[in-house]
Amino acid sequence: MTTARRIAFVSPRFSPEGTVGGAETLLKALAEQAAAAGRDITFLTTCAKDHFTWNNVREPGTETVNG
Image (cartoon, rainbow, N blue to C red):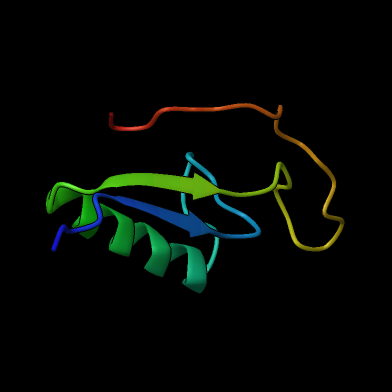
């Protein structure tokens, strides 16, 4: 049996500048622990900065953090 090496986390909002809420804080902690265990982590999220307007503030694209 092989162990999965890649994990994707999906969150409606996630900011590289800092986490924005409880769910995002938990996902960040889980991702950091999984990365420390050798997993390849991907976050899938929107370009929105807040949950009031859901306006796309960030440019769409790919960003590498701590990698």
